[in-house]
Amino acid sequence: MKTTYRLTLFTLLYSLFLAFALLPTATATHIVGGELEMVHLGGNRYRIGLNKYFDDVNGNPDAIYPTAIIGIFSKATNQQRLRVELPLRSNNLVPYTQPLCAIGDLKVRHIYYSLEVTLDPNSFAEPAGYYMVWERCCRNNIIDNIIDPQFAGQTMYLEFPPLVRNGGRFLNSSPAIFPPLSDYACVNQPFFFDFSGTDADGDELRYSLVAPLSGNSSFSDPRPEPSPAPYPTVQFIGGIGVGNMIPGSPPLQISNSGILSVTASQTGLYVFAVLIEEFRNGQKIGEVRRDYQLLVIDCPTANAPEARYKSNDSPNFYTEGTVLEFEAGEDNCGKLFITDIDVNSQIKVRALPVNFDDAGGILQQTIGTVNGAGDVLTIDACFPKCPNPSGEPYIVDFVIEDNSCAVPLMDTVRVLVNIVVPPNLPPTIITDAVFDPVTQCYEATVKIGELLTVEVTGDDQNDDIISLSALGDLPAGSNFTGGKGAPPSKALLRGSRLVMP
Image 1 (tube, one colour):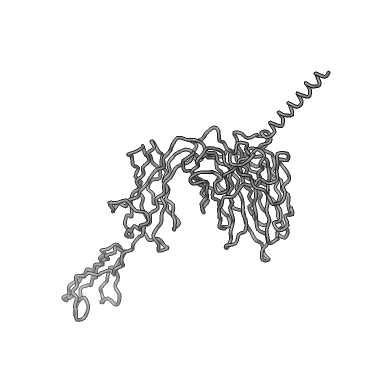
Image 2 (cartoon, one colour; image 1 turned 30 degrees about the vertical axis):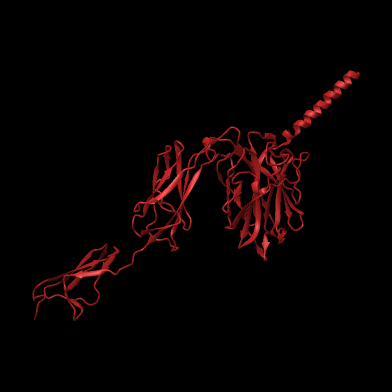
């Protein structure tokens, strides 16, 4: 009995050890990231949504719940004002920017929860506004830039303004954050990704990097009811902070237009967060955080394409910053010369207008191939024939991308072009009548009984369309066949036979 008891106790303790050892893996949700949204649909109707991005390789499908619980709180008092349970709406894989670059270690799934709700504006009228949250534990246990990631929670956070302001309805939708990221970065190679959003109300969006929120979920309570602020952030490992959440040269950063960039110095899986603040008439009205992670791996070395521009009437390549001048109405064309030392580089070219609305038609070709060092791809680029309505030179960014993995490497050439309108000179008139300097008139002599025909020719040095017509009273029995057209333009003054009494 004693031996049996010890064996049973040993077995029980060993089983408990295994259970606790495996708990972090079983509990970890492997959520890659996500963000909340609040969309005004009309009247008092809103759609509240949660975009959740899930690690489809390492994640546990049991962590994908059929609903997501959202809490809405007062910013002034931190009192909960509404609890919303969002049903699952869709579950799809996120495509790679370059599908041919897909790797088996990285697949991201977009899981979307949403619900249409009716909000009484008078119940959400506090001047300080409101915030909503969703909390869940735990993160991927292989994240490299935070301490104990398998015990760190996630909190998706959104702020929105009051629904009533200055005695009237205040209508607003949160920024739509597009697109999700399913790419990886390569160590010691530049990485770029468009993390920008759009705003249905035309509000200004400002971007910055912030520490991801850990929140109040825990290993023992992985799916808690939403709790009020404040929310603790993740704990970074030594030497890591918001300024270098992905270390590199440069480290992870985000531009004013929402472009993420980094040249990572070491491999690993890194979590980060982007804050998108929403401004209307210079005043902040809301914000949304996107929590995400990026995988950095060791890749074959890739090289970015290089491009230069040269106008057809110049023997030299364009120097960035100078202003080219073309004459209005002419074929204001040039060529992009594109090289790439990597073999069989597939090239895509875009013309982006900087200070005007539409760059369509500037590029005569948008794709091509460069077959390594010594090969050059040339693409024609023709600028508008009329001046920029703003009066400024046209500013165009030619963006050249290759098909490098994990994401395309690129080069950008900015070209400034001024379309010059030559002085508008007056049209001229030529006729076979004789000019009398005394009378300042053209005169023609006709004999009695003869038919008089005078030819009039209009011309224009600017090649403008001209018209010919007669002013005043014509002699009785005569007519002038005027007209309109490109110069030179001719017309005839004919008179009938004159009969003297």
